[in-house]
Structure formats: structure tokens, C-alpha cells
Image (tube, rainbow, N blue to C red):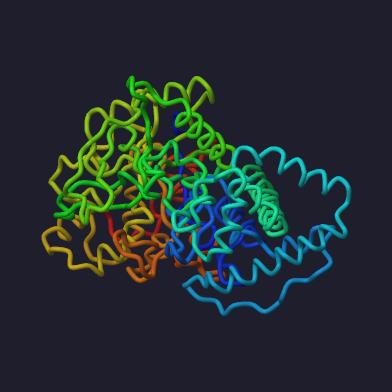
Length: 527
């Protein structure tokens, strides 16, 4: 995949300025598309769209399904406009805040889904009923049946940890599956209906974004959560011991500069190869299904922890740290060549951050996948740092000021205990005479770079500090909740970004003559 010279904005759907606790696929999503289209953007990048839960800290990277959609995305107001609807949603709104209220949003949305389903049963037109039936027929065997049953049983046990369920259903014995399907039939149907509504609203939103010239960049983590429908229904492709009902080996990363003991993520690993060393068909087919589903929802998909496809760190389950692990070869070219043959083009972005080997780079480049570069990582190690704009030689990469895992750019520059000599170096590199407007200066640095696509987090456009970062890796509290308030990201920001996009040729089809250097409002000339 080759990237055209363009710009994107990073903002998750739940971070939009919704009135009921979180952003949704309602009017706020369409307004946001209109806004960023006016800013010269070509892409909206979001985080994974799977269902989230408080048990997993609301993390979109620890979803209970790699295929289902997040019910929090569902606009209850849009759902109420469906022609079968008769029940109006509760009009009470949540006071606007920079912190999403996931609990209020979830409780309200679930009540509205149940009411809407009852209206659907009583008042749906024949073509609407057929549309629901077609949706179920299309996805039941692929993932919907397993997800709906998993979610229903989890509600009954009050736990997504299927390994703690009764053994017969944990191991999916036929009689137990049939008994639970019968027992939970009403709840299962409502869960499927919620996915039908999500899919319906998502397709409309994506079509609108594409019509306005905005493509969606999605995101998938390489591993699935242990407490997920995927692990429960596909344990044979994972390092899970059915006798002990626990993982055999789990994912992580080894000790490095940032951690003396490495990181234990806890996800079960994939059984990539059979006894003869060949790529297992069942593991491959699951991944083909997953990639196909992801690119059906989005125009491009970022794969988190891409280096794990070349080699991954394996730690025996029960270890307290990641120190006693080992590297194991991943599926590498075997997987991606088969995907390329079966799917065609691979509209994927490789998250290739961290310590990356020559083999990982070869896998990325042989598959023609854009990699990632982070400006916040550019100012360590001297002038040879590969993330410095003058060292970016390829257009086929995505340059970020920072990602969801980074501090905001202003938080990083102003609020942390950055050594004075490093701050002086950054200022000299960027031609800054004072410390003002750092967020605009680093955005300009990104736009001026050779990278094909630059992506700017919404918080960086607004110049926000550390308190508004999206996630702090290695922590479980106060993550994923940041959201916009109505009107704070506005046409004034977009006008400034549009001029910048014009100057640095990031508006496809438009001449750079539509802007001028002075209009970018950088007060100081480079020194």
C-alpha cells in the first residue's frame, strides 16, 4: 500500500462531544467529519471498535470480541428515528466534561437497545426484518453466534473469565451449548440486534465520511484478550491448556531500557505452526477472517505490535515477570503472502515502534506496508535518530506527533521533567526563540516532513497538557476516558490546519498557492 501525501487526525469515537456520557455515531460524528474535512484532512484514525468493559479498564485493546462492535458507539437518538421505533429515549443528558462517563452511557444505551428491540419485534416492516435476518445469516457462523452466546453467559456468571465457568460450558460441550442457547435465547437475540444496529449506524457513518473525502483508519491489537469470545470459541489456535483451563504461555516483551523486568501482557499466544513447521490452517483462517472483517469496516487498518508477526516473546504462564521468556519465530512472510493471495491488497499500517530488527523491517517492506514514526521519540540519541524529520527518507510511512500511548505534545514538552539540554536541543532544531505554542510548532514540523501521511491527535491541535492524555501504558486507572467538549475544536483550528496543509502539499488536488507562510501564524522566524 502506498500513501499519498496527506494529513489525518486521531480521535476515538467515544472521545467525540456526545451529550450522554460518551461520543457516539450520532450527529456529533457527522459534525466532526464536516469539521475535519474543512481542515484539509484526508483521514480520521480511531482506536479498536470492539466492545469494552469496566473489568478491563474500558480499554479498546482488551476487548471481549475481535469482531463485534462497541455498543457505546450506538447513537440512541439515531436509533429512535428508525421507522419501527415507538419508544423515545430518556432525554436527560450528562453534564459536559473532558472525562467520558462510560457507566452512565452504557446503562442508558442498554435500556434504549432493549426498548428498540421490543419496538422492532412489534413494528418492523418486512424489509427491516429481512435485513436483520440477512445480517444474522451473514455473520452467525463467522462470529455472531459465539459472541452473542458468550456475552449472554458472561452476564449470567457476572464474569468474562470463561475459564471460571462450569467446566462443561467452558469447554463448549455440545449439550451445554444447546442448553445455554435455549435458556438465554431472548438475551442472545437482543445482543444480536445491538450488533445489527451498530453495523447499520457504522455503515452510514463510514459512507458519509468517504463521501466527504475522509477515510477511516482502524486499529486492531495483535493478541486477543483471555477473557473474550475469541479465546473461548477458538482455544485450539491459542496456547490454552483445556485440561487445566488456563493459558500455557502468555505474551509480553522482554526487559529493556524502560523496564528491568519487561512487561507481562497476559494474552494467550497463537499456535502459529504445526509439528512440521508449516503455518496452521485453522490459525491462518481465523486471521484471514479477522483482517477481512477489519478492512470491511475501515479503509485502512493499523496492526498493533507488528513485530510479533516476525518473532514474539513467550513467557510460561504463572511467571511473575517477563524476564524468563524467550523469542519464538512468528508466521512472518508465510502469513502475509497467503493473506495477499486471498484478500488482494493489504491496506495495513505496521506499528513497528520500539526495538525493531532487520527481519521485522524486511517483513514490513516486502509487504509494502507503511510503518510508523513518532516525533516525541525523535530527540534522543543525537542527529542520527531515525524519527527526526530530516532522517525520514521514505514517503511510505505515517508520522505522528504522538499516539494514544504518548503524553500530549505540550504535556511532554512543558509538563514533564525534561532535561534542560534536551529542551534546548528541541528548540534549536525547530528554530524556536521561546517556549510558546510548542504544539503548533511540532505539528508544523510533521506537516513539513517527507512522510506520506501525518496524523495529529486532537489533544495536540488543542494544545492540551498531560491531564488530557488518552492512555499511560503500564497503568490501569484513568485511561481511555478523555473526550472533547462541544465547540472546543472548531473552524478556527481547521482554518489554520487547512492553510498548513496547502503550504506543505497535504491537500490532494489543491495547489500550495492557496496559503502562505505568514498565514500559519508562527510568530518567530527560524533561527
